[in-house]
Image 1 (cartoon, rainbow, N blue to C red):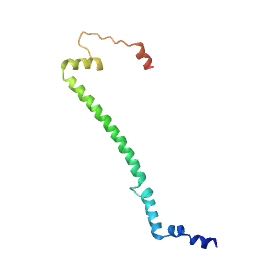
Image 2 (image 1 turned 120 degrees about the vertical axis):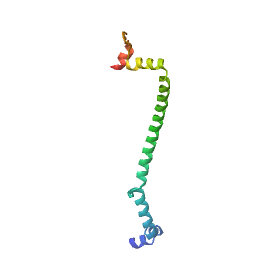
Image 3 (image 1 turned 90 degrees about the vertical axis):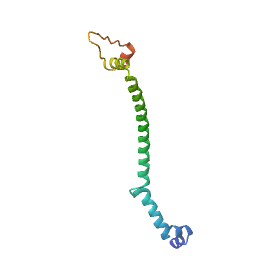
Image 4 (image 1 turned 30 degrees about the vertical axis):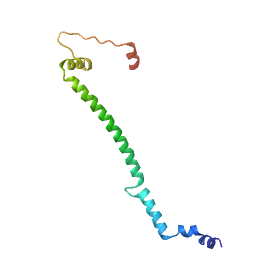
Length: 108
């Protein structure tokens, strides 16, 4: 009597309906197994967000570089930059580098 009782329940008839079974199989297939599944879409969204952050960072770097290039168009600024960044010097000139105790502690 248990099986007959189960078959006559309205929710069992709904679950065993052919359309519901096909629709359920289709939804499961589209969510997990298809090449354009929901999981792949979520991964791609994460990657898009990561690339957008990287794009913003690179745009900021480009803006900084443009400012530096604009500064370096002046001969005096170019010489200052070369001396500070690359330790270049003129002929017959000596350069002394002074390191403070704070910078030595950070290096260790």
